[in-house]
Amino acid sequence: MRTVKVLIVDDHFVVREGLKLILETGEQFQVLGEAENGQQALSLIEEVQPDVILMDLNMPVMSGLEAMKVLKSKDSPIPVIILTTYNEEELMIKGLALGAKGFLLKDTSRENLFRNIEAAIKGETLLSAEIMERVIATRENQAQIIPKPKNNLLSDKETFILQCVARGFKSKEIAYDMGISERTVKAHLTNIYNKLGVDSRSQAVATALEQGILKI
Image 1 (tube, helix red, strand yellow):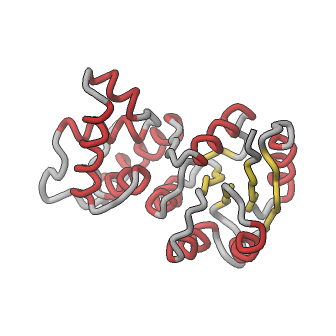
Image 2 (cartoon, rainbow, N blue to C red; image 1 turned 60 degrees about the horizontal axis):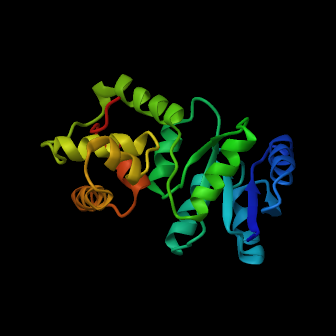
């Protein structure tokens, strides 16, 4: 079994220790390091070369978002999973735009933690339905200040597929639900990326949220 090397980045010692203890119950995970802020994280990343990063958003010195911007500018292949609390919807959308592979509430279950890390390692974007519905609901409540798209960029089918992606469904599950092939779903996703000017599921969801395209 391949060992997955994890870097935990959070300014709260209790959160780091809690996640570390959970991860240590899984034989496939190894916590290589911990950081209190984004600046420390960037130094550690160079040193330990983790397979996945668990990244808090709000931290002193350098925030998680700022660290993610640096990683993106360097075309870092290391997947980042955002550690979040409630009432951070706007920050989560920005994290998605920077390529985050998913979100984890800091009090998440062992099963959910392991599932998200395993998905990220495979290059998948795993978005919790509970969290995404909260993010989308926040956007809808702010509808009066969100610029609406001048025209309908996405077809009804493309919008439906992106809604499914935002709720955490995989291409295979979407294909089954729609009665089409998985290959067709992936073709639609490629069209969605081209129309929105993005290159990943997370960025597509973030852009659609910014433009008011996604609805619950």
